[in-house]
Image (cartoon, rainbow over all chains, first blue to last red; front, side, top):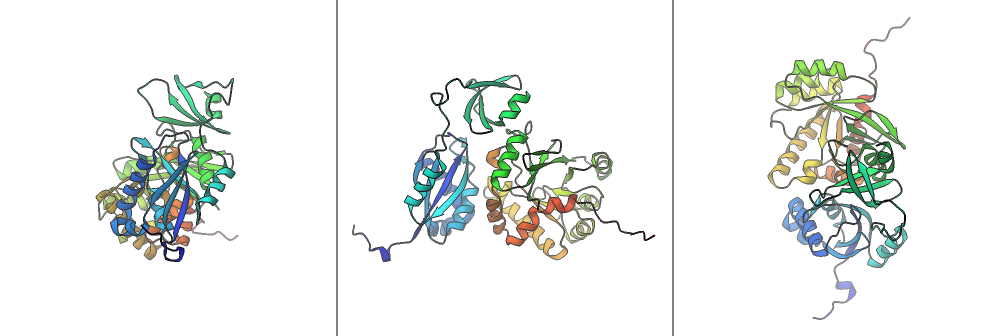
Length: 169
Length: 214
């Protein structure tokens, strides 16, 4: 297949989105299907065909998405209706839009990785806590926020708290 | 300016604490949130208003409960039902918001109710969770209801509020996302701005009808 000269290529825009909650394991393909389903459901086949949404990369808790130039607004609205990826509840927070992937990668470097802090990085931190008479495992900890999952194999729903909530209890 | 998410459900109705929701709301661009069954407070620089939802079956019971629940920092809302109920509730002093209009009957909110809501300063809530979470016919129905409400809003100018009805931080959306979703309903930026200020508008003390000049 011959490569088209730059002037004849379709103009694309790239969106940088943060995948919430932190540390969720998402595959590119499943994320693409989730976005595609949300976009088709909202805008219909014709608009999505014009929009051409695609997942380019998943890096450090962020996703780089592609769409056609001029359809960023529709793409952003469709992204706000993505609520789940397979069985996991997720939310996509749009950080930036750009004409190049490189500039979005620079942005990721500036923001820092959005991945859970591992136990090795924080020795001495208590990774378990109790809340409402139950024991939880701390999945993610940022400045004030805590993401917890109840210990055991039955309940895998996250609880979103702050450090003050734990201190109060 | 108090850009407000008109309804969120923190623990125990949801999976996030009110503090976490307030932190998230600040990050998403809100100044205040109406948290269901949570005491009014300030968390950081986010104002948390106490959301009171009255689900009494009859309008008379609603009136009794509204009198009991009235107070500063409290936002009283009533879920919409049939046309007669909505008319009475919209004209009831102390009711700030009529919500869940997308669940109600097609003719539950008509031009008479719109006029009453405008006269009484009762806001109609546009809950964007059906647009976010629902698909197909259910979402189309919600969009249709909201288009009808906005048509009446442009005519009678009753207040509008916007809520995410989030039960966790994952259900909350940025102000820009909400504006984008509202653009589907034909709302421009100014409409969205006014709607986000709707809670501040309906909870502000109303000027007295009669001014006594000594």
